[in-house]
Amino acid sequence: MSIPKRHHYVPRVHIRKFKKESGYYLFLKGKEELKNPQSSSDFFVKTELNTVGGVDGIKDHTSLENELTEKWDNNFNKHFKNILENLYNPNYILPETLLFFFEYSIIANLRRSKMDISLNETLIFKEVIPNFIEGLSFNGGLVDETSKDDLESGKILFRKFYDDILKLEDRQSGLKFSSLIPTEVKSLLPQKCHCIIYYADNDLFILPDCTSRVERSDKLFNLHGLGINGIARIGIPLTPKVYIEILNSDILGRHDNIVVKPTFREIGNINYNLFKIAKTQVLLNSPEQL
Image (cartoon, rainbow, N blue to C red):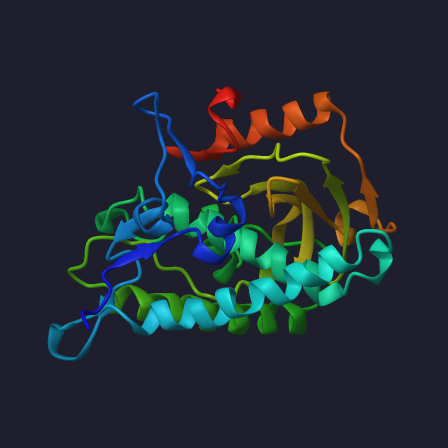
């Protein structure tokens, strides 16, 4: 069996939630073209996206792909089921389920955006953690009233993070994409989340190729003495009927989880924003959505 070299940046376990009896309705933004693929194998995909450098310069097409499969595909349906089972009792949705989808969304957005960055540009830390490099030298990004011990522990923590990323970049030497990021982004996750679930009666929500919306906050929080921009909320269309907005309770305050029936105006606003942030491709529910 040949080793797969074409890798999905939106996991197929997620894509398949949007399949219709007649296949998929894929809109290509740049070409203004609607396609009707029957399989998810040929879209939301990039050749060698998850390829890394192996021993003696031999390309490794499977290690990261297997890691992402284990982390995302094997857990997606478990957490997805937890949400569906608690649509009428949303406060029973597990905290780890919300954190799973929060992290899933961040990584999906970063991976998709880095597909458009050449190797020469390398990983740009400021798009992940503002003032990251400056913070290591304590020239910027610091929060007032932090102790010397906090600053030192922050320096050690982020130096390790920085070294880990340099190792990842080294594995990419000579490859096509600088699209790999650490598969752990724990430093950007809140302690606690709450959610608003928009549950529509019909198939109405669309799926962009960047998976979800990620909204940063202007508020800095203290992480080991460094000032980090928190991510305030993310929004993911889980299925054509279910759009979940996961809110960072550390920034926005703690509230109960709620499920609402969205109005057509709310659905229109959600889809408009999802369509706008899509890079090149969007999954629709029917040709009439154009």
